[in-house]
Amino acid sequence: MKFLHDHKAKIATLTLMFYYAVSLPWLTKYTETEMFFMKKMRIPAYALFLMLAFDTVYWSVVRYHEERPGISYFSAITGWIADHALLLVCGVVALGIFLSTSHMQPLIFLVMLTGIADTGFDKHITGIFFVHILFMILTIVLFHLGIKEQVTIGRTGSDMIRQSLGYIYPLDFHGHFFFIVLMYIYLKKDSFRIPDYLMINLANLLMFELTNARNDFFMIILASTLAAAACLNHEKITGKIRLWMCSVYTVFVTGVPFLLTFLYNPDNAFLHKLNSILSGRLRVAHQVVSETGLHLFGTYLDWVGSGFTGEGMGSDYNWIDFSFVKDTVDYGILFEILFTLGFIYMFYTQIRKKNIYGIIIIAVLLLSSVLEYHTFMPYTYPLTLMMCTAVMTENRDILRIFRKEVRNE
Image (cartoon, rainbow, N blue to C red; front, side, top):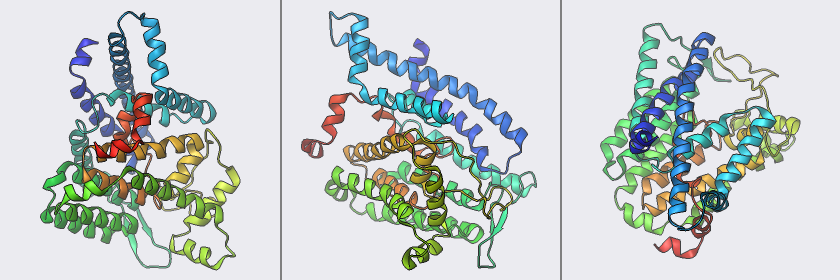
């Protein structure tokens, strides 16, 4: 255990790199045999995450005991639990989701967050970034070698043929690049310059010719443009950003898809037109939510999308592209509340660090999630791991976050 603690940051980075290496194949056109093997390969990573989480909690309790001389370890444990209400609440909700729906992802996500909580996200993002880059290159190479198959699909009402280059779907190909760009901006920070902007958007334009993934295309332009503009005077810009602004933005962006989903009526000319512009997203989301409802701990639902073949676009198609709506159907209302608060906390950490680039990528990720489904997919897209330090934050520090003096520290 001491070896694990002494080398925790490196072990956590290697574990995360291994985890993404065996999880990212989900984004490709895999066989059932390949996915069975990859799922088995994740088990050692889960075991290591559990050990890392235990280490985080153990040493946190030890520090709690040392800071209060004279109390017993039992009192230290119960006192520590009482002072870490957020971790307890997250654990109860994640367990409730698992018992209600058999969805394990929130529970695994919580263990991952706890495991890296005392090391932070920044120590691991470089390793994660290179795994994603190498995976994208490898997938494209395997496609050109004929080992990974092409998935092509036409856009409704157009002669456009959308290509995936070995990914499970054209949108996943471009979506993966979108997350790579966000990680790149986060890593470059103040050194992000015009050559970076041009390089990213040249690749973005070439990829758009293949995928016709409009949302990811425009979100990449937005993120890179904001990053390029921020380098002109990032300190002044960051100094004007307040947590309440980010909180309002988060709640607004999260709430809009729900509002549109509940209000959708095909007889309303405006909503009917908006649904057409959004490629039927409103109709599908409204239909699914009307039939399944939204529950405290979610519900299990067999999602039918376009998949490998581009089929399934008929009456059986039920895939919700609004991230927050789909996550709420899967994992429940309580999860969505905690997840939204997690995004606000992510903003808070970047404001405290005066990192305008971190603020940009969180803001763009949230905006993208209005029309895409991949916000809560930590097994493929890692940015939500930026919430990691939140779960171990003590009650008094959580309360301090929203006090006025925090903004002026």
